[in-house]
Amino acid sequence: MKLRSRFLQLPLLCDAERLAAEVGALEEAAWLPHPQNFAGNDFLPLVSVNGNPREESFKGPMRPTPHMQRCPYLVDVVASLGASVGRTRLMRLTGHAEVSPHYDAHYYWRERMRVHVPIVTQPTVRFICGPDEINMKAGELWIFDTWELHRVINDAVQSRIHLVVDTVGGEGFWPLAMNGRNPSQVSTAPWTPRRIAPQGVPASALDFETANVPTVMTPWEVREHIDFLLSEGDPRHPAFEATSLAAARFIHTWRGLWSTFGESSEGWPRYRAALDGFIEALRREGATAIVLRNGCSFAAAVAAQVYNVALADRAQDDGAGERRGHETGKVGAM
Image (tube, rainbow, N blue to C red; front, side, top):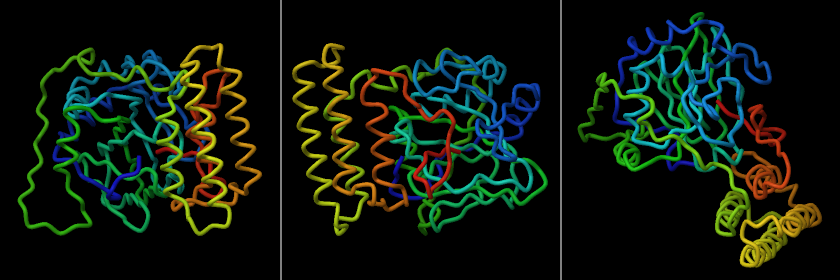
């Protein structure tokens, strides 16, 4: 999710040693290799579709896995966010490994923040987002601008382990974000994070994400995604004006189809024809040459946020492979 600041520390502190003890009690076999086998990257699923630790999709009801049920204080930490909980993991980065530079352009992260909670870390772990760099200390809670190019470098021998919670937010989350600390700004105002005490909150009491991918994307959501991507482009680009007109025509067409069919499968062939026609128009107008501020291709971002998810008429690549790479415009995640 694009944020106003590259890093924001939430006004909460957790007991990292207690978390580390719970994580250390989980069997090593629960850790899974990165889907693309990036060296030194593995993860342990805590919240996934239907609570299945082997299910890597972004689509479907997110529920706690048996691993999360064995970590009561970790549940307390997640509960303290006051948010709708999406896919949640422990993410481990071995010593002298890194998370390669990428941005999160996939539909799932367009409106989701990634809350990072360092559990096992050291001062030499560097989290880099754009030109800014920080060290997230054990027990702190952070969100950051996942839309901007970012990476992580672990220069130490010891592994780094973070709790990572994906969320669209919630009633209790926004006050935390509003009172967060931007490390790039100097402030004289007192700022004392609240410590998260063990409370024994059951995992079943959390709000878990259930609706996350549309059957047919509403015209208002279509317009929101496309307007956002256009705002990230360079209006001086030779293809920008023609691309904007092609986008306006597509939004107008989609609005008319929605008025006629809504989510009814009767309209799906015409929705699909409109999507295919839009992509063809973007190619014809030279939109593939437009590069967004974060280095992502405009066309690749439209495919990730609209074309691949606006209509559930066929199996789509939902990005569960967590592809990385800013040169190719592919989707990444950390």
